[in-house]
Amino acid sequence: MPDRDDRLPGTASRRRFLKNGALFSAAALVLPEVPAGLLTEQPEVSTASAVAFFDTLALTQVRRGNVRHTWVRKWGWPATVRLHGAITEPFRDDVAAAIDDLTRLTGHELVLEGDGVTRVGTIDIIVSRHDEIDGQFPSPGAVCNTHTRGARGALYFARIDISEDYTDCLRHELMHAMGFANHWTRPAADTSMPSVLAMRNAPFRSEDYSDWDRLALRLLYHPDMQPGLPRGVALQKAEAMLIEALQNAT
Ligand SMILES: [Zn+2]
Image (cartoon, rainbow, N blue to C red):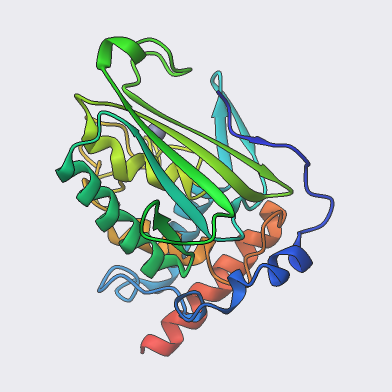
């Protein structure tokens, strides 16, 4: 199932985004965190690397081997995370910890069903027996999969399928669900820039969100990065935010 926007952006959906209040959370107003030492040693090189990282993960998709660029895709309203299937207590705790982390990083409210929230958007996490889902996903050999839906770049639904033998997919798939449709692969990727969105066995795969992932999450969920924003504008904004963050850090 591909990631899909029901309505393509004409203009960035700023009004809708403003109306839904995503803009005003305290965490989202924080400038992107600069990973310690990573950006400050060689600011020009590192800023370019960070923008390229963001571009690859947030604004690029690969479909049947074809690379295509997209617009800003992100959640514009709170979402309830619902768990289905064979859910163990440790897995539920892990989901709770991961979405707490994401909420802190993005300022975007994700709440586990049962912990109380107005349901607006939904993220369904379905854990299934491996033989039930083996071979079901678009990428050959994939053990987990995420499908998102949005309108004009504003996501409102995600479905995450996880094999019960590979529950360590969780943070990778949640990152897809947050709007990062792509993977972190060679030739751009190397061990100096690990990411949870690298493929499972890659040497630059991070188990948890790496500093670069955290930076990308901050950039995507910065209030100036509106859903539906064209790629070129989004990249200019990302660069300006990084330069400003670096100036503030020195
Ligand atoms: Zn993936």
